[in-house]
Image 1 (cartoon, rainbow, N blue to C red):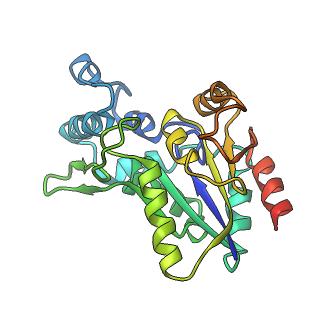
Image 2 (cartoon, one colour; image 1 turned 180 degrees about the vertical axis):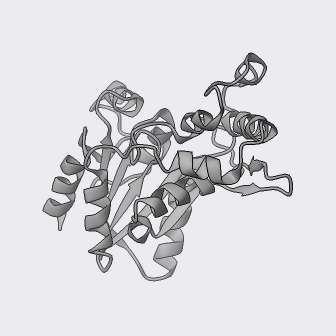
Length: 239
């Protein structure tokens, strides 16, 4: 029996939004209105494709993008938490489910020496094309009306749990750590033995509070957090 830690990335593992942090690699650190105003609700990944094309068109090199992404700050206590997880891999599995992209997350974890903590990353695939422009694709397709078109975190979590069960791994407890509106959907598939951990003052905490104690769709225990130290305390207590 093992424990599964599931993390969102932006405003959870790192203390900012990696997709907006990348704009700092531009000479004037801002997007033109033509790009900025092209966002459509629910189509963030499509928008990020245009952002990265614009960055490439300004002759910003892949190395410059990577070095800027490596400066994003981690949320307080998160490096200690991930280090602890990497030291207890025999009993703790750890995945990231994020609306960022593969390159940003890999670069940031590698620069901090924390990639050993994370078994798998589920996010939007990103590659550099022959022009040196970064292209971002949708993570998957789904039919969930609650989630953005490119990513339903519940679908990813349920598929991961099913595949692990087929491999003989059943989790005694799942901790789901997140902050945003798209973290509500996966929180609703957790069991009564599991814990959903919303970041204090962020959207997920407000959504969970709105559900209230009477809503039978939420079975997991709710424990809000403001630093990785509080998550680590709960993790250690469950071990």
